[in-house]
Length: 516
Ligand code: GLU
Image (cartoon, rainbow, N blue to C red; front, side, top):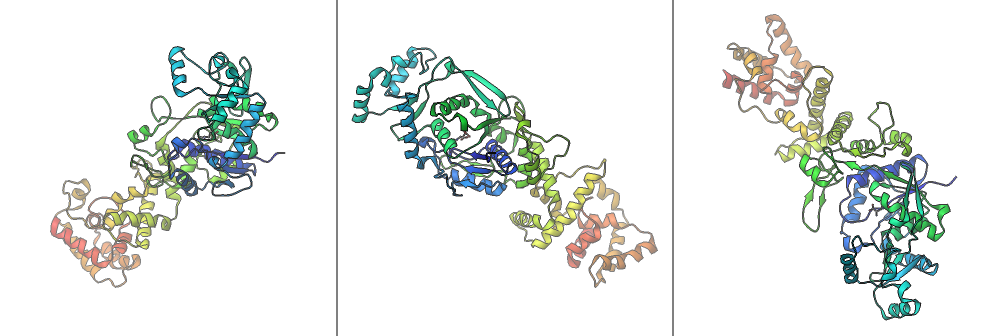
């Protein structure tokens, strides 16, 4: 059996859209599942749309996401070069082949002439019905064409489409897609001005030479597919024509139509994998990485946009996805971009992560608030808060803490680093737990704590528990008012150990003074 070879072939025209990431992911899953190869090809034949930095951006995004390529730009391989702008000589040979076989022709029409024609003929299309009225090798004859080319007149090579034939595209997701060739125009395949092919020709020649077996790409390329099939035929490559799979569009989270960057700006979610600094406009766009998403969460979320393995397991690792992925089960209709679900995935992955792995990000976040914390302190805070979050989550009826991002921790864990500066006497928890006699109780407790030499959970228990038992007092909530300022936070002994003796006593003293 033929070895699976697929490719992801972006044009370096800017940041990679999240839909492109999903396309690359599906190619990756398919390749891995079949023990095949994934190629990274850069389609940069449209120099007017080239954006510096885009190629590096795309590569970095895939490094971050853990999508690995086997061959291609920056990876090497024996089907290179993999950047189309470096393959000029190759395309020239194939354009000539089509010209020699009478499957393509040379056209000299200037942009002005074409515009004039468009104005004159409604719905003008350069095709069988009009090509004999135009300025090309078919109307000028070989000698005049030769003369003009030799003279250096700019020209393009157009594909000669024979009208009236049914063209079938066998699509793995959509089944047989059939159109009539009469609706197609004689597409430009090559331009003398920059000695470069257009997308269509370069794409087909490269897929053929790179021995691509499956073309998995976005639905927006479906209209080009019949033309591509005709090109394969014109070259006599039908036997090795790749199989097509056109993936469902990503749709707006709300309303109609396809997902756009504006939806992200409007609703507050990124549409790019990494932050993007547009070199032309200077505009900075959000990225999943910088917004605090974990790559595993992004992968899991994207994989299920347009496909699902059935059943109700939603948390799937890359390995699970590789095993379960099934192109034939992709949906034909568009997939709504449920970004809230993306946040949910992030939360699930975040909660699974070991505390130490949260620490660097939390240290960074605290640093932005002017708080210096060690990695160990940060990991401790995460441990205490995470326990709390999971507890809230599992205890039915309790309000959920919405930690979807590490940055959500800051408002919840502020009190670990910043002492209460004032108390809200109207707060339910404070009101309920700070009575006229409480200050005296807290003073007594502070005295006990002041004598503790072993400032550990056990040490604190040994000092306070006998007093609690003997007096029947319940100091915990009032103590929480002192240390936290409100009715939240972790186990009190744990918190006191984290704060240390001095800080614990200082906060108690302040509460006693302030609340009286
Ligand atoms: N260069 C095209 C793009 O930017 C590739 C389309 C295809 O995969 O054929 O998406």
